[in-house]
Length: 304
Image 1 (cartoon, rainbow, N blue to C red):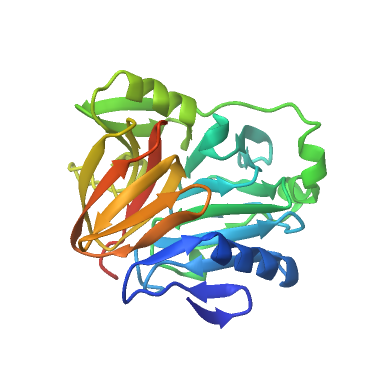
Image 2: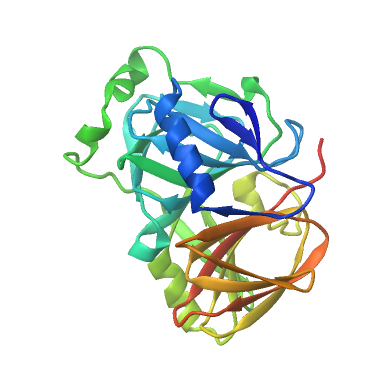
């Protein structure tokens, strides 16, 4: 990867690269030193890419103000514990989400529709996550909740979160669209997905299953589901073949053997947990552990 400026790196795009513990340690050291206490690797090819995708590290000293965007976004937890607070237009808390790695059984994935005020808190020393913004980049696409309405929310410290009662109002619905494929959406605009929910559905199927945010959540009007983001679950010792289209892959739970270009690559949550970009190639994903394999893939569209 290439250092663009302090705390920001560009992933190598000429060939697929494995993201491992050594790279995450670089991000942790960087996040602890930079002024904003955040560092990231940019997976996308340019500011015009859609979606914008990054592997991001938060130090728990980081202060993320209340913000809302003109695009939808997702947050996939890799390591650590974090918290999202969502607000209505009057500054009142409308929903809370505590996010942990999938291996802990809780909520590991959050999808946020446009124009929903929210604030992020890192609760452990470091938080590692995959963050996706479903748009090309422009600073005009993000606004901050300034003024009296959000002043109380912006003053809230991470240490205070554990003492507060959680407000729950997600209304996440998981709908089977065809055998093995499930869309996720919510009338509140906030989708949350837990490993318990995913594994319960996997148990009812004999083959791998896929979960994806619906076009409605992403803001796409096409009748055909684009499935830019996909979360796959595979039973132990089973295989799955996928066509990758400028794709990044993150392991969420378990261990996999990836067959790519006639080579075998081992990925797992403990060491090598991401691979990409993989462009216009078929891969075989084999669950080589005795527990369910969960992984997330993102396909980058053409630059706008």
